[in-house]
Length: 294
Image (cartoon, rainbow, N blue to C red):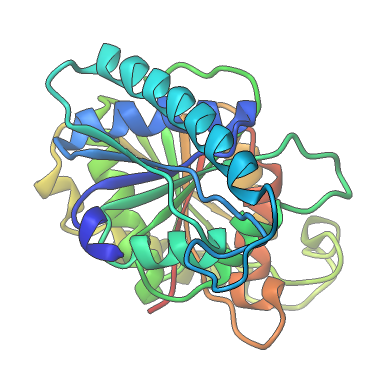
């Protein structure tokens, strides 16, 4: 399964408007990376493609559905060629579970791109996207939600915390910023407190200047060397005692892309994804790239 996606940008398509936006985003990213693009719609028909049991009329339903989907995918392939006529664009229509099929393709893919639903405050990410993000390892995952259009030259925002996944996110963000000629904003927020830290700073006898100095040192160390590798990328650093999700979402308001590393642990899906990753994927107004733990 993964051999067909080796080195390609893979994008899942489910006929929704958000997945169409994801296809357009993936086409631009494929062109920028010089990679082939693979459009995938996974058929979740109740009967497996090679199941021994058949029901009367089943073939009469599946075949027209496949033909309609192939026409839909062919139209999308043409749209992608409008981005770059030289780009190799393929489409596949496999049977199976979307999570399993796309996760297998993501193992050797350059990037996995998914659409996300229009979300209200209390609504979670779609099941397929959430489960794929919670899967460890594989290529980075980008979720493209419905939302307002933001200029491609808007800055890319990346979360910085000194971890291995954060380092991977920083590399991803610098590469994206350089190719798209945009600035980079590195954000480090250190508060996991249940209350607003700003209202309590004056009451606590803590060396806040030392805390900030340590935080700024961590950011400087994390970003060290990348400026030399990408001298064309202008960098702005944000160090704040806010909660990470608050700082990232604020900076993402005017961003073209938000990049985070996932540090999830535990048994439940949200813990596997990580609370910060879960929050920004669901609420950020721009596309979100998640670099998953190995």
